[in-house]
Picture: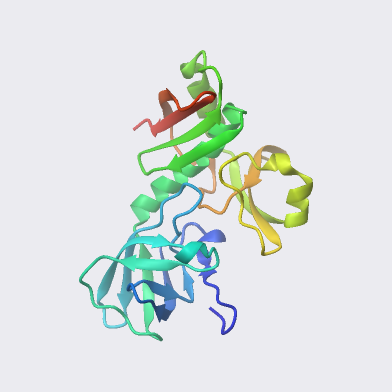
Length: 248
């Protein structure tokens, strides 16, 4: 975090596979939350839970992290929330950030699968949640799908195409000029920085999905594995919740 910039460097944006990186403590707040100049921990937002793991001090002590959040909704900062009863570091201490990789990787696989679900079901998305075992999207869907198994087959067919997943950035003006890129009605991409992070899922020159997203993803859909559909639940007059699970 540069002096005066008041930002955390989000290393997971350019590399979701960083499971251990060095950082420096820049603040320990009144609640014991730990802010670093840089981190590979993703903070709770956009339906994706914050990473868990631990911070390792220079002396080898491990500070267990229960979750990771944006303080007071400030999307430029990340607070690592330790479990109770632990010794906290001092400002200026060097630490190594270790995420729980098994948990993170499941979230990455599920998050990318949910992007593909929004392709299989091309309806406005009214909500969503990403879990390590199951995920779901809420759609503006007045009638239930006629054939869940057919939808599952379409989803798995996309996964099996071994599509590349990449990030890129566009300006806020470009997004404003193309509002249909935002599929989620309830969660809007963060604005105010002049640029928007986009996730593209593609097969060579063919784009399968392209939408704003700040979360973590796998590099190729072959990493997701097979998925199966769970319940389709009615949530309001014209909304339905569609859950997907890892098949094994």
